[in-house]
Image 1: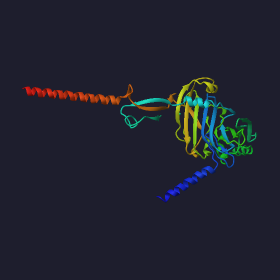
Image 2: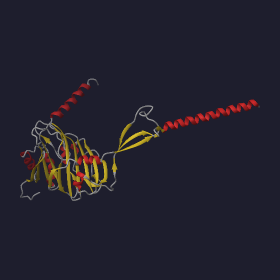
Image 3: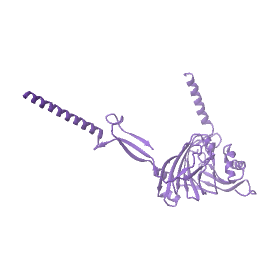
Image 4: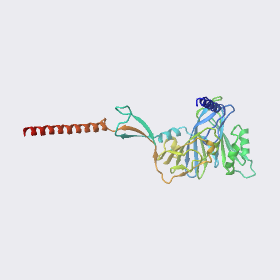
Length: 359
């Protein structure tokens, strides 16, 4: 066993070194690749999805780490898309709305963290053009903050990859094969090149939110291209719709977890996104430990009932009255009762002996 320990350590160090040297990409809705000899990883992707039954709007924000100065990703969409910068205020507002409720639960007998043993503790308990057209069509190209955005159509996945690479969008080697299902369905594409306005500044931290809007009679969140990722994925979705929504399947990831569900009256940035109308907000978290198992896009559907849900953080405290633990009052009361009973028995014994002596 002792001989195996150094070998295991060496193997672990080799894996860690490889992960630092090899380029890595991670993106919950596409495939992100950095420039040569650089690293980038999406530590967290959070997206706000607004769907009214006819059109869908996605505002996404990436939190990235690494030393890359340029990177690119592509997002398939089922219809013609418009793209712009999103309101960064959306995410703090939604985080505040979906914050867990803080509640207190009491228990009777003291635990090892209570007096006379110790303190207290918190516990979490528990949201295409006709055939005569060219194989790649450019619908539009814009510069939006740190993003170079191209909106494209394609009838040939290999031609799409060629166009992207010749226009500065470096993407994964297996991209053409993964794009074929979208080409067959005549989807369109939003290709994004992340190029900071400050030349030489690495892509790190929270990037500007990007807003993508397209017509859709079903609520979809593109995920298939994430199977190209080399690192585990973490996805957070805030869904704004008429009803509580749920993914139709886990699409190869861990079971989606609803962290909040409830009807809200939007204000501030949320009101601008929803037109100020009351909507049902569903917050969903999901992890993808092995991205290669992702087998499709998320399609979300309304649940049978609009059941509200909110996570709760419970603070467990010993039950008290007037600041005094009830168990202590109970024990003290029991001792007093026993003492009183004992005293009565003693008095009764004395009286019995006196009567017996006088007789």
